[in-house]
Amino acid sequence: MLFPALAVAALGAFTPCVAHADPVSDAKDLFTRGREMRAKGDCAGAVPLFRKAIDLYPEGLGSVRNLAECEEQLGHYASARRAWLDLKRALLTTDDKKYEGWSQDAEAAAARLAPKLATLTVDVSYATPDGQAALSKGVTVTLDGETLAPALVGTPLERDPGHHVVRAAGDRVQEPQQNAVDLVAGDNKHVALRVVVKPPTSLPEPPPGNAMGPIEHPVEGGAEENTGSARKTVAWVAIGVGAASLVGAGVSLGVRQAALSDAQNACGNTSLTNCPPSVHDDVSRGQTASTMFTVLGIVGVVGLTTGIVLLATGHGHSQQSRLIITPTLGGASAAWRF
Image (tube, rainbow, N blue to C red; front, side):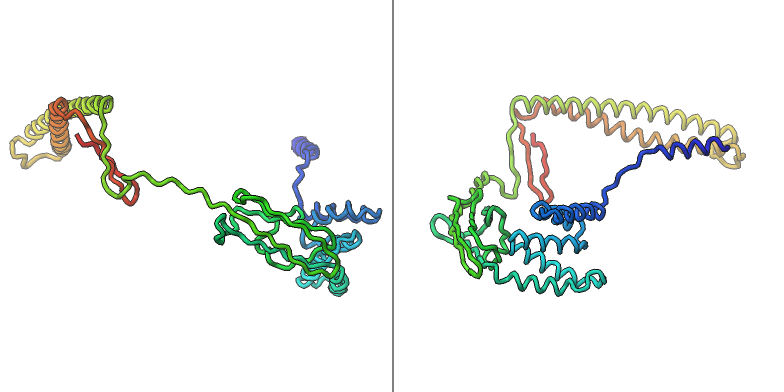
């Protein structure tokens, strides 16, 4: 028994490990690489790593602080201030001792950067070609190439000093609109765009005859021939079923009569009184056969009658049949009229 156990252990030792994605571990790895690049003076390369680390593990506040400090070092004051404010908000949900004093640092940094920024408000109005007010659906507004969320249109935005471009375009825009503005620290400027929106493509009018009521579609030629062929097929199937049922009824009648004869012989009379217990099986067999005779007889008569009627009326229907379609609340019902 020792050898199998050792074999299992050996196989387990050589089983390849399956790597599982661990966002926290990946975030810590990105943070470490970002710190190494920052230590070498490469904040431009470290910023994307810190951002990815935050996306994977928002609770890693070290990445947020390093991002804020790097953005400020690069002169991206608006991004740095947003990162410091994000850090301050995140610190409200933790009391970890290793973050002691960080809230004051974030508040001081945000206040220090505020005077270095400018404020830009993007105003966009929408109108149809004839001057009527229109909705913004189908229009995309961008600021420096980045999509501006509709909720931010008309909202003062902090931006770094420099050249900024606002653009509006989209499938329904008659002609893309663009405007540019240069900002310096402390500026509070507005950029306005007027966008002409093309009306939506009108849908075609529905064809007449869709009212809730029967709709008749004449069916001629091949459809008529197909209907006649179907009638014949159903007729012969009905006759076949009826004939088979009548044969079965005849057999059942024979079984009933045989069971009745056996019971009368065992009882010694035709009234089936004072009979021995052995007669029970004959009586049960006779009752079953009697039920089968009745059921098969009815099915046989109905089948034969249906088939004969279909054959007899199949040659005299009109030369034009009609398909009647009646709309209902749940869909539609269809029926043939001959």
